Length: 178
Length: 178
Image (tube, chains in turn brown, purple):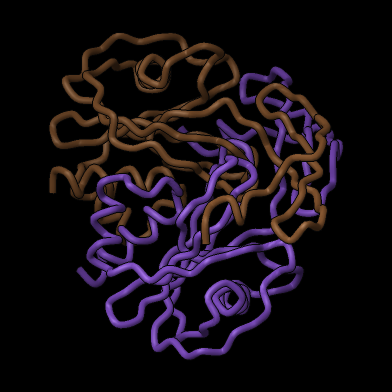
């Protein structure tokens, strides 16, 4: 089946909510069978995540995630500022969350959950880390932990992390260096 | 630092939007430093995704994703219905999207994007596939493709898929059988 046969045509749209971080839209769309339905979409500015390696350890951040009401251990990550490139954002987030800057390499770009948001995530590795901290956002309280790389890979494979980008990032980088 | 030091306390909340699939809430919260801020959260019913294997091929679905205005090739997936178990949901989605049912094994459970939603995703493998189709949702237009497993693993490692759960699922299952 060709792409055009599945495409959904936007008929009209409305912005239901515009917040600090998210914009929620609802569009009326025409389905391939001619019927009309509605689609709810979260518009997101895009994000980065970083696998930062030093002495065969990976830098991870422990933080409270309000949406899931628990602390998580994740790779450093954050949202793009307006007009910020993914590379600049990765360097900034790494400095804010861990205090280090590094030599970046682009690993992958993917949609986090294309069923309901356009959030795209750019994954980088960072090496040759140099201490060069930036002040974190004033509503972020983050602890940095250094995890041996082999242990991080084992934890990813055994599903001992509970954050998708963290599992994905570790497994992808391991596939390149392992 | 102990968990309690980073916890954000809910002061009050409001439901900004309640849609077909998503509920958007905004809560006023007390930060660990005593200041107040707001958190926007998308409440989601949870989801499943399935790596369905047959004759060393993996079943994938091609569909139009309105949120990103393009077709994608993803592993079968879908949202939990009210009171549905992850296993029942995985079987239902597999039957709706590919026509097969299978013997399920739980692989992993993770949060897709804990920065702004509580969406949790349960990943299963499915084997011993038997043709037992269910009618798909009437707003879903899906094509099924069988991809040789080795090719799928290569594509995941090379970032030739652009959907996080697809890359993650293939790499995780490969780590178990590879």
